[in-house]
Length: 80
Image 1: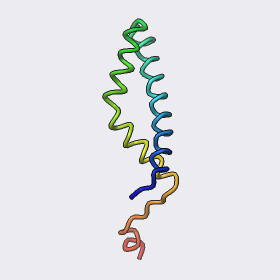
Image 2: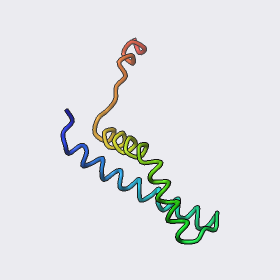
Image 3: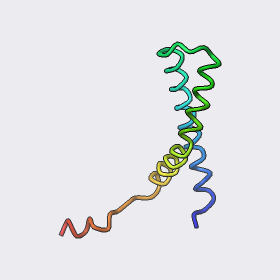
């Protein structure tokens, strides 16, 4: 079982991704699509809701890759 601090760290990474995604969606809808403030807010909420599963997985992957190195089991066979 993974230790609880892993999920706390992934939570902070998820927060950063969510903020970046929110800003990106807001700027795109406000500047490129010329939405008003309420429409932009609704677009941000919809984007965050739709991309939530991807966001959670991505944050866990990024957090674990900061501390654990992945070694392919077949890499030893290819080098020999």
